[in-house]
Length: 313
Image 1 (cartoon, rainbow, N blue to C red):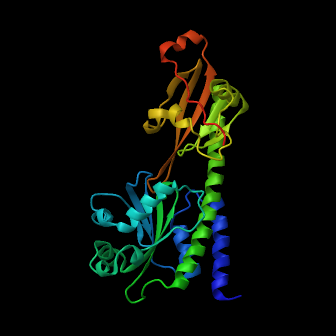
Image 2 (image 1 turned 90 degrees about the vertical axis):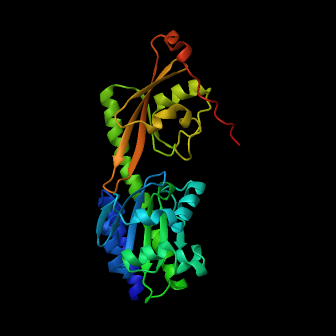
Image 3 (image 1 turned 120 degrees about the vertical axis):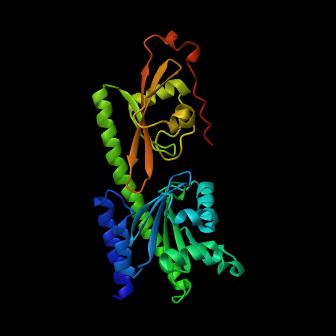
């Protein structure tokens, strides 16, 4: 077995263990594994919120949250790499289910005649002693990116190195996807315990990009009654078309605030569950209980109707 193959196998094994035991996936443990198995020493993990606002970064030199003096603030307005990958991630509705390589090579994004004098390259040189970068995009709207740097002396990334980075992307993306499955299973279990204690009978749990992660039979009966038996998206395989209407402005409300809506004689109570990470990212989930109003007339003019689900193709 050659050294490169041995490194790939060790990396794969370490990530498999990491996805099960870690509280956070993209951290210094990942950086250490990349250095140990591939010799990739100069790597930066940057974190953003789903709207593209910078939160923090993690480098082998340390962790630095956003602040007035953060070096990235000066570069961000001219960071063509970030702007491009974020725009494409929003356009493609990127989530943590993606395992297709998404690599952004700085010398392919910045014209050769502008490269030497670009503020992006000055930023790399001043902060990381680097001149070239390849950046990977992960998660909701690319709210996590992993950048690999090379110095002027090392030269730009070769086709062989880019091919290796594509393989590394696939390893990381698959294990991150599995990490989220483990994590979300624990979140659903915690939420279900809360619901059981509340005494509610019908409930559903959603993630922050409009998938229904869990929906019990009692809730399906209620939703079929409201939507005429055409409730879509209950299996979580795709975004649910009527969830944005139900959640409405509740999407931006603070954690622990309960919202109540009455729709066709059913009372919906909407709770938020925020999964917070040390890097500043907050993944928001909702759990929603459904119960019949005691007096249908109580809904009155405030009662609403969910939009009809689109017809199946």
